[in-house]
Length: 338
Figure 1 (tube, one colour):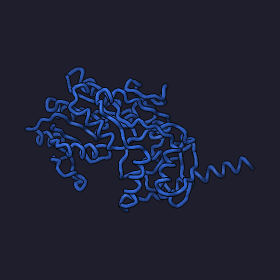
Figure 2 (tube, one colour):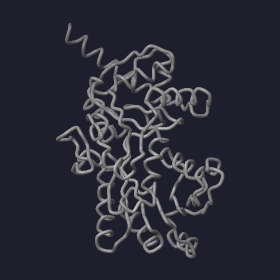
Figure 3 (cartoon, helix red, strand yellow):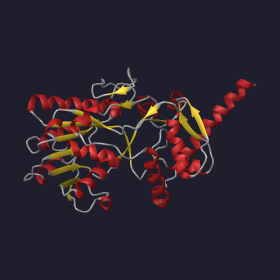
Figure 4 (cartoon, one colour):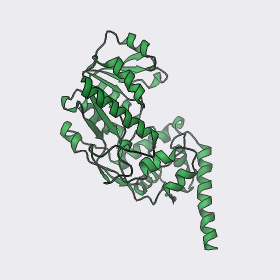
């Protein structure tokens, strides 16, 4: 198989890239080269910025592919560019959308590909929906061979998956746990959530590549394991070898008092119970099984981060914000009790 990935070194795409190369895929990565150290050996790199459409068109003029996948498209205009570049040059175009595009709040916590797409809380999700709508029009009107993939919360060994964290990543929450400080969990921690290790996601994705039954289809790829946020944070604390000191805070309150876009990532995503039905994926990829249980994946992630200080990026601003939120709750409780 001859494939081109636009991107290829992110949380989701890196695992796919590595698995494909191990299987002997003829893989090209269209990449700016800013993270050249992360480029896996064996991939053929087309060094360019995808935003430079004319330059990319020159570089791929004599190339065609079985599969082209864009991991870094977020707005319809970027897909319009992709259509101009790859229409007639690929047998399948895979767009990485988002499971956050599904109806929020859900009318049924069980999510299938037939669940309506609607998210009034998060512009990111609405843009993904608009991207999907554009591509489906191109499929219907011009025969553009599109497959839409919707990841949910996918993680790897470089970052601990969390509900609430600052703009510099998740390490500061782990640091608070290690120091015995209280850690914020949104809501009461009992809402249901699904986390998927990127190695499992890659198996489902690769099964869709070159799959004629996936053309014109939308498919989400997730684990079948469902956990609560309390279980997630307990699992992280256990991997760190510490006792969890949890403080539960209303998602609406967190969104209202944060400078970050918690309205989108919480109210439009993680604050809602979500259970994914992967029946469609398993029909298309019969041997798909997500085999990395959350506690196993978290232990690997925590171990890797503790072994690599460069991944331990501190976030003093987020740390101070957590203290202020918790202190405000303590003061409110004290004033009510008199």
